[in-house]
Image (cartoon, rainbow, N blue to C red):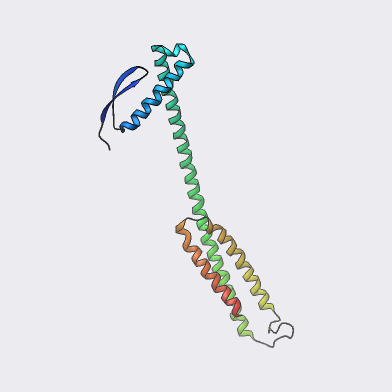
Length: 187
């Protein structure tokens, strides 16, 4: 906290001293603005150019300043409320992202189980597909992979709007995508 200091001001022809912890440059800027506003009132209305009028102009300036201050306080309160809502929405989106990651992991596990089941069956292959199951496994695998791609797209959309601490989810998602793509290419 700065040390308090005494500053002498001249506003609307009146000299006064104030004690403040604001820097002198700030106080001088306020002094200049206030003196200009009171002079502007005096130019608009001859009655405001009198000593009483200058006092009224000073009071009007104080009312305007207080009104601006209250408006800013209201705006700040509204911004704080919006920030809380945004934080809550982000928290919900992160939870949804985690849920989608779990669903994606489950889809990957189902694809693994389907591939293991297909390998263990190995009966005669059909002429049409060259596969023992007539292509049923491939159809099921494609459906699972399609589900994976849809979940992956939804997860991408969610993680794109996350803050830097949500980036780990993107890296895990990319690893799962690469793993599934590599398995698809091998089959």
